[in-house]
Length: 272
Image 1 (cartoon, rainbow, N blue to C red):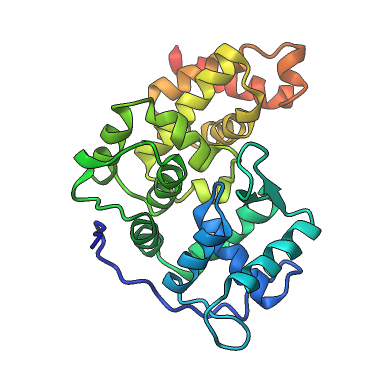
Image 2: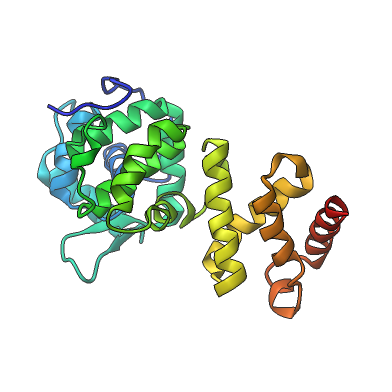
């Protein structure tokens, strides 16, 4: 038996009134399950996850493998399914669909319920993280996303982070969990400590390596800086100052110069 820190049973949720995103009701439910897993999964994975979510098909029955296949075909026909060329049979939702569907999950359930579901599905015991193995990257990313978006603090996340750091930098997995792609509305749910840590990592990566895929995170941090400079940790303000002062042609093409100048002025003013 697995355990989670919240000890929360999976909830039976009413999803009939949700925006189906142009999908049939059954495909929408399958897509919600796919969004919860976040990264690449198989139809077999969904077959085992859907009962944990208490989702049933339009006939009131448990989803069969065939019904899941039909849903996957519908998603593929709408170009909302990205298949893994290196691993046949594995797929994930396109960003344009998995972001709004994960937002729906966050509206339907408490973040702790999502963590509980991921723990049950991947058989993770959050009380025994010293035995956790990072070789299941998909599970690690899904668990990190659920925990971060549930607002988990330092004490709650530390065991998982320590387990990941035994083999690699946890920040890379966290980037895939909540930064790539970046959804500012969901990121607001992240604990302030982890917001700062992840935004700082992204800003340093953009500053040092011009990681353009992380620019939306920098844009978010710049917005936070202009709205309430005192709220940001000094190290993040300094990292943003470096970016703001790099407002040459390369930077201006991706962020309005007025925003850069305003941020630089704000930062320089605070350093006097």
